[in-house]
Length: 187
Image (tube, rainbow, N blue to C red; front, side, top):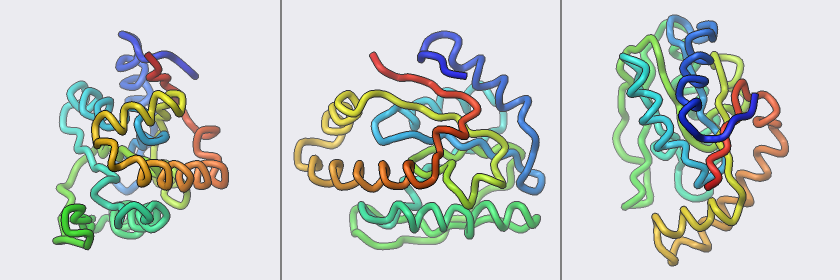
């Protein structure tokens, strides 16, 4: 189902979440995926406000730098989803962007509902443990504009390099084609 980002968006997403089966132990995991600048972080916060008890995990905490997309996808599976599916506690090592290195380990609080937002959150191999995939998108120029507006012009080379990596991941993985809900965040 594809819809535009309007008043129906949250209701549609809540419906998808409520109908989704639990596939990761006792935790229902919802991936909020799509290219950078599509509005995943803001949408995750709004959606969490409508889902009492939901925890949000940001992929930005998992990427080991601008070239770490594939590593973060693997870490999401190995450090978070696989342990939860086996009834164990999940923990992940947060990336310290300011110092360009791994920081401390963080335990993920036990939850019945985990929203994982960010590029690669719905990619394989973690997809089999996720209950639903919500895809957010906007055209490339709009997403780049949002990113540069947020991060500053000096980040343009990083954004362009990252965009090439996410496009390659999505082409290989077919993430969008597996979405339970597609949301356009175009103006």
